[in-house]
Image (tube, rainbow, N blue to C red):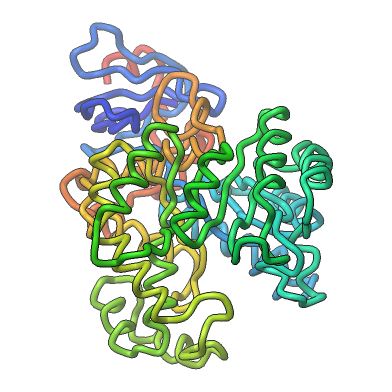
Length: 439
């Protein structure tokens, strides 16, 4: 397949390639030819007119919890629910989604359901059960949550369990959250053992943190990515953010702040917030009754107070630009959709917030593509429009580098390419290879 008449923003940080021809062979990008190239694309497959649009790598939702949505559905409804959710992700340009914790059985079940879908679907990556302390988050002494986590209190068990799990999942996740020495907190030596085991198996480790000290300990232990914006000791000073940024940049540790999580938890029950989401195109007026009618609307979250969440949100919004300037590799992920119509909408809100926090659009795109892929070790084959990469892409009719609306507004989405399979609704014209060479 050949896509011509597009500007390619390849996701590597290179300058856009105007008037390009993009060749896809066997589900991968096989060539990206600029307008100035003397070589022309040839082939017997379909030739698609990009109509002067912009082709960017397929987006990544790098922190979500699909397992939680499946667990809440009856078994005979899970397949259709998952297929619908994946179709919604694809419709907003997400071609890869990363699930950060759930039972191993649901991982296999989800993939089984998606294998039955005839059209393109996003690829899924799974952590499986997370590592936590005894009755730590997300278990909290609730038997129905036991399958979500391995409850660990020593390094030997941590190492052994991590070795076993690494062969069954795409990456590992640790919840490193709690009072030092408390039973519900994963011990530091156990965290180090998990990182050692995972790296022996060639797998990355993502660490969920709460306070700055936990972030620093997780990075020192060798975690590959930090999940969630941390709670600062002094919200009025940027010094902590600068220190953290220097550490993350020096160690090449990815940082996924999940801004929309703290925005939702901090403003749960605030009807004015819902009106803001309507104004920003995330909600419609018709969505509001369903959201305010949810059992948890306006109720405290079990792990994080509204006040704490507001502090984490405000501090992250104020300092994320500093982290970007320091060279931190920021990844986009939404985590929860408590006050959103769906996880894909929460993800779009995350992209809006990254832009509002001061990241240039090139950095927002990097967070949504190659950095999101890189934090779980997939950036060698996915997340860019480069020769040999999986042909996942989003076609837009406006320049996404010019503003966030061009990336998140559905009016600008032409369609997606998932492993070389296009979804956009324009006519595909098949032409002889000789004609393709001169198209």
